[in-house]
Amino acid sequence: MTRQQRFLSNAYEKVTEVKNTEEKSVQERYGSYCHRLPALIRACGLCQALAYVQERADPRGSDQKKAMALILNHVAHTLGVQPDQLIDRVRRAEMVEYMHMTREVLSAWVYYKRFATSILGVESGESAEGR
Image (tube, rainbow, N blue to C red):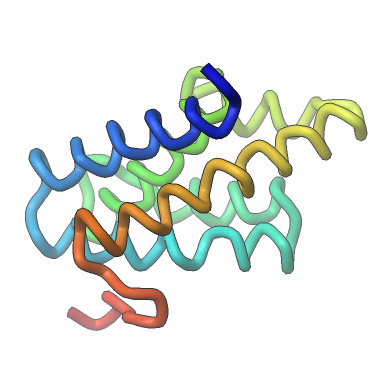
């Protein structure tokens, strides 16, 4: 299996899981965040983007917090680390590894964005804020 096939397969699995297990409002927020995460990473860097997501993540909280927790878990899955170790792993990475992690997330997230549209029905530019 190629790297791109792995990214596609993992994203399909995770987004389908969100579709099958989460309420519509969580799906909408999750889809919106799938579209926004790459821009956040490019603007702020992987560390700051993940810190932003972690600050707002709580699997037992509001729909927004649940969606952020899902994003954090799916980034961790993409990088092959446990969600509770993600921030520390990225924080401690040497420059080359950090750059590789950033590229991995950005490459994989192309598929998360596509499936947010095709599976969840959330288009780029749609905001779930305030719903």
